[in-house]
Length: 438
Image 1: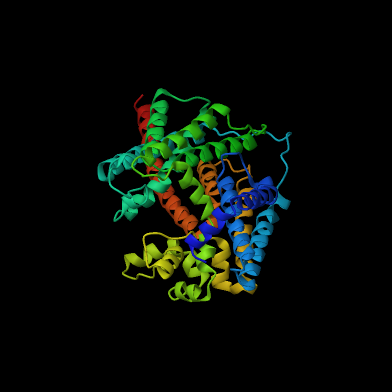
Image 2: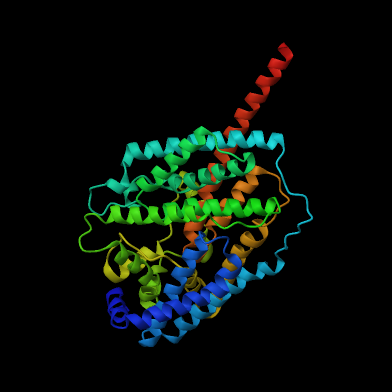
């Protein structure tokens, strides 16, 4: 079924579509978000919405006899498998014990954190200034079709760095407030710059990133300090939704008759486009020509860049773009390769659930074990695990993207840690020299 045909069917039966979508969202809310949601501003909320949209897409296909039984079976089994996988580690999640001593950081760790914060802040500002110098302010771009993604065409490394440096900085900034119980004047200037950068990017999800980092830091420190988990203050939620509306409104100028609300509806409507275009034997054969196995596709971000350094290019075919190329002959757009479709491609309709189960178990381990683990006093570990936990929902819609982000976070962390330790050693040696001189 093509996208235009699907859209016509939905619009002709709009009330039924909305009812089915709401019912699926409530179902995902009960099974999916009940245990995993850290706060209302959580990537899992977006995943629940897109998952409900995808399930509704499958329903529409089934209702119109446009889906083969083997594909329907594959979708249902992989969806159940990821639910079971995510909730498996929830069974081992330890309840908070109020009698335990709250975990605090000593003076040495606080001093190291300061260096980590200074280095992260410097890199964040530097990267953003390079972006403004190179591509300008994307939100105000007058070029037709330019957005926060294609503005980086030919600047892949800069784009990859920009994706991770902002959440790293935001997480460290919010952690600084929790560790020292205050913001300095410089911190407030950095916050203003962070908000400006988020608006200037033109990305509606940019503020979602900031508030997700905030929510995960709050949750983590509530666990470390044996405190009740606080909800995000209403004034922050107001800022969040106002900012998104502002970006949508500015971004809609010059967009003709297509309103912001229509664009948002289209995003939800076509969240299952991978199934519309991909549940087709010929399409599967087409996208599998250059993709040999799940391991080589999923983990390419970890080994592919090193292979390129020695002249070996094994870049796998972008499955979502491949489907658009197969159907429409275009390579400028693509579907998000949800876990259901990857499982079908690499393990087939009968055994695809195994891959979805493994993906779900990984998500559950990060969310319920690694993220909840409160005995590690390392500030670096806590920053890292907050970041990883906040992006694990991407494993559901695009595990390739998750691994790319994880790889870039590891690289940036390595750079920041090395520089921070070097500066701290210089600082400590300087203090020792002063003491000896005295």
